[in-house]
Length: 327
Image 1 (spheres, one colour):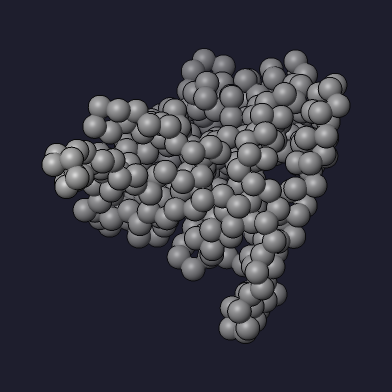
Image 2 (cartoon, one colour):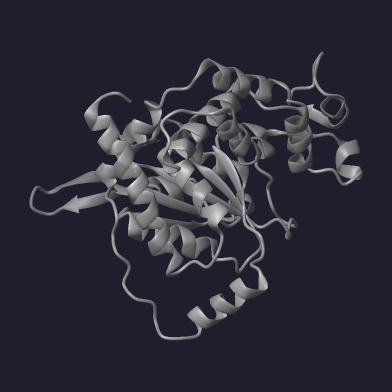
């Protein structure tokens, strides 16, 4: 972070964050914490699981963010009959009348975009869910024996409806761990809901200003990884993730209520989220408080509660809070 160009990029990230937030506020009412977590996920080069009941503007938030950042947006509606090729793409046989021959041509699926909204991802079988795994991890898609790169930056935002569980396919732990954060969207306050109704029942919204572009977002993702992390903050992030694992020395609540805790990928996510958070706040070194503020969205979807915990109404968020209280 000592080079002049790095400092300029860091300042551009802070400036860009303010402009993005201002543009989003013209369409999205409230949800400041949700917007912050999604921006952190984007600039940390991660993916997010967005959980909320219908009608809370999840799709609008994601599509508006893509528009502001001048990124290609794609929406996939996950259904029980969706096939992997419907996501990644497929080959078609074309007739070349001039040459008198036939050839295969690859038709790109909706995953070939910068921002992919996987709507209600738990409504499709695991075989189709797994079509996103390689894309999320490697930024590549393999089809027909060939591996094709995805456009960068690449961000998957998958939504889940926490109410309707009938006919759904819960995401396996291995796939949940691929998500950098779980972002929960709650109901708006009275004043916010009044503003929402006023905005959506009035004149059409104005055209939004484009703040950044794909190349600039990719450059800002690189600068996030250059943020220095003091040894104390690094050690705290690793210790926090390790304390969620049911083993000797873990808090009593963890040993009693959890079947499985967060793995090493959670430690990495805590540090990267803290790096992005401090830059978005205009600071250039990670603090322990940055780690603590990132703990809930990074850890809650990585904790597997046992049957006793579920029977007694305990939540992963509550257990994260208990771990933070003793760490």
